[in-house]
Length: 261
Image 1: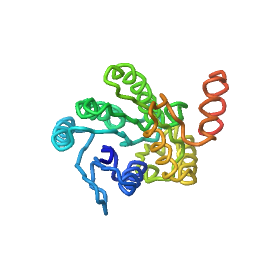
Image 2 (image 1 turned 90 degrees about the vertical axis):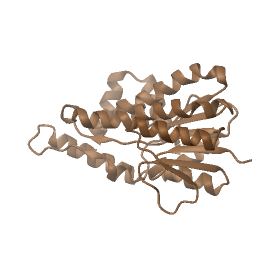
Image 3 (image 1 turned 120 degrees about the vertical axis):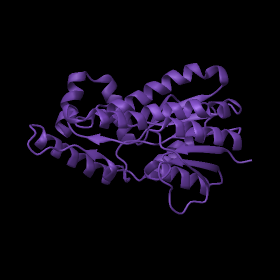
Image 4 (image 1 turned 45 degrees about the vertical axis):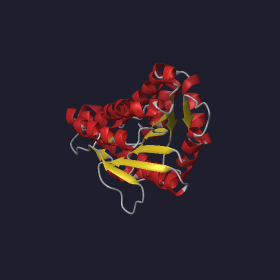
């Protein structure tokens, strides 16, 4: 019997690539997203991660149909671009509801099916969660929290033999770039810096790695008997994350300011 894989954020970007690839490779895929993906042949449930009641309803339906889930892959993610002073409470709340709070509620809702099969949880984080990117601070904060969530869950769920891992992609060529909500105010003192930084981010993302590379890493990690705590996608980003841990904070700040400040 094929492994049952539950994937959030399956309608676009990395989540869509993972869902389609794993379905084609013979896995039983269940996709979750706010909007239904086009041309799919796997089971799909509409699920808005900002809607706690919908998450409860959907996870209850899934548990009835699939009492055993092998892997939960949390891919849903949104971002804002702009100076943190100009990001509204509503936008900040939206980023955290999708990237963190909704992910937590989804994990809580589906845990009974994971416990039945000593399942695995893979959280898609970001290199931006390991290295804070200016004018994308809200996104960096939320993705950093995803890594902390993984570390806590690994210890708490060990008694159930449930393994948890964070995968950190860097710049990846997906629709995330065009879907980012940018706060750019013309008469703001931040305007020039925000505009320059966002343009650099967008260029890097559109010249980034193909999402299929992320899928390969996720698949490899998923099939390990014991998953690592964290895996970074791509040698360049592995080296960058490593440097951020060993270099003085001021040096890292200087480098990031030169890149995005």
